[in-house]
Figure 1 (cartoon, rainbow over the protein chains, first blue to last red):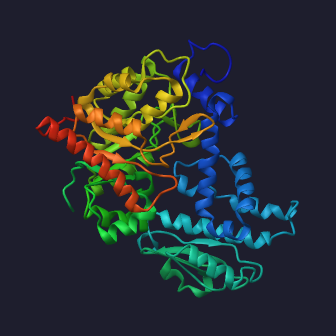
Figure 2: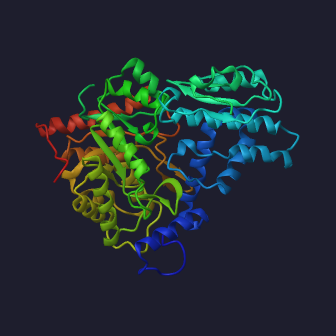
Figure 3: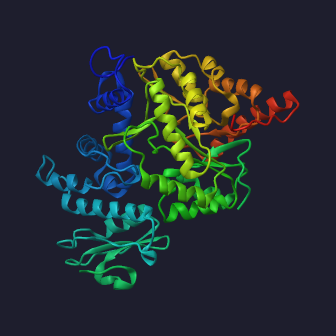
Length: 200
Length: 285
């Protein structure tokens, strides 16, 4: 096995060697195959763990296909793998223009992805709303696009979250943590600023 | 809190087993956690406090980017220090690797060339971490699937030089060494013989999977016979070092982890009985 990149490089500095190796992994160089495979696998697994409900509704094959595209095009910019995938909802929403536009309700799945990501962020957040933590506000759904069946399924997959059985059309969705419980509901249903939620 | 020493054979504690461990307090002398999962607030941290009430802990990290060329992440380091101060783990460990380049996070343990330049670079960053934490850390040898042309030191010579230069301890992963033996032809026995064994503060044992003729350190299977044999051999020299069963992928029922742990404990006990003494190793040379 030898140095990725070009030619004999006995005089390369440490930094140059690190750079060449990193680039080879990202470019899926043959000499670093196990690392490229792991890079793809570990990030796909992170999406698999965060977006449990989206995955369940899409099915494994479609979800994995989306995961592969996401990992290829969205670079991880945080040390915490648990919060990788913050723009996955964009990729899901964009499928409305793809070859499977009619196969799924992509708008609803995109909203579901946003909610699942917000739940994850609150799960790992430093503090809850009683100690300076802030709620995450998501744009109001245009209609009641998330059925109560979907929301019950979402709640079953995130047992540490209290999720309403229906969102109010036109009202933003708030996701926040109180103590060890995560709350997900339309803003109008919450008790307002006392819980760190406002609908400004 | 229970006493904070890690002795005997412990287990890597993974999230699916957290509640079972809290509820049933199984007979395990200590647990190791991937500390990166506990640096925020919320449920994980609260659950870890409940674990800590009954068990000594070891903190194992994968994100310090110790051998990277980007600056050390001060936010991450501060979070780690807060967690170390809060939970008082018996051991804190990281890897001799890099995992970030040009703000691109690989979330993997990437290898480095074994050179004097790398020794100085890595040891300097280990010292920075130890100074901030106010304690010694253990540095773990990697499983590798690539050798740099630039390397002119053996891995054991490299790890020895880093440990001495940084005055840190060593986390000896015997499965990693075995994987390197098969994949890269680097003899496990020579590797272990070349290490400063008095600095070994923890042993890792795990299983691998074979993919296209390459052993991949997946931590997804039982410990293999050659690794058990290597562990038994190590225990003939040091039977006082805490040993950990790591299992991350295809996580089995807790009972299977316990069975693996008991094998490790038995090997350690046998070596101790044969020697007739309780060997006491020192973390620092």
